[in-house]
Length: 125
Image (cartoon, rainbow, N blue to C red; front, top):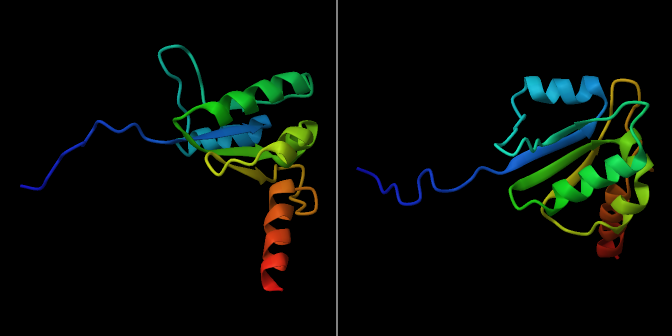
């Protein structure tokens, strides 16, 4: 039989989501939801009553976890903590800004996309 060394010993990498209720619910229905024994989840629902400090805390928590590969954040939530996204430089977890139901994606606001486009134009010279 095949070599099963390490099978079942590796933890799977998670996708975290920060966004409005509809966006987060969609991703949860797609199966990305995770709540561990300590009641720590990989998602945050942002409402009109959510403070920017709460979004900051979730972002910093998700980006510092070693079991997270991708952090998805709706652009309207990202706008509330734009300075943190502008400072974020790690490759993993990757941070991706996504549209929400009520707010279309604007690449001009996406600091990570702007860095990529800048590097591509510098590399083209």
